[in-house]
Image (cartoon, rainbow, N blue to C red; front, side, top):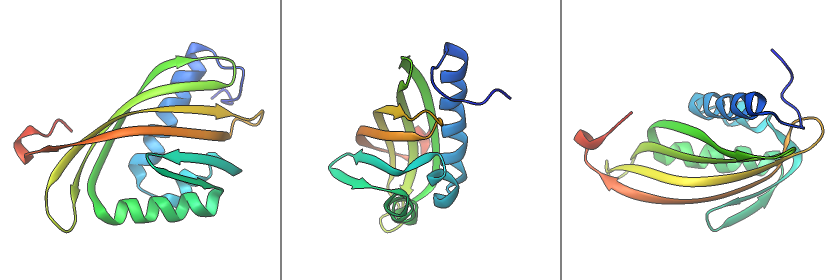
Length: 135
């Protein structure tokens, strides 16, 4: 497979999005963190943090409360070193048992090695019943 580094084409941007979806669906925080630069800067909703250790901590906490997590990402737009995606995922809260579908957007910027340098994410959670699940 061709190395997924900037500048992106439609093919490599779509492959980068699919690789991200696959990694996140593994629910392995360390594996996911390897796609990010050591000093990657994140905004996730109202949280701001920097670095792989913080990414692993964030994802570990996330997946401790979000059971049965299943994600879909879709390429929205791209430039030479940036990709924007829209996404939705479903999950069940470990404490309440309530199901949710989360809808959102991410904007990514990559360094020359193809590691994500910046991740900016906005999302909304919608309560759903188990029968409303799509994934």
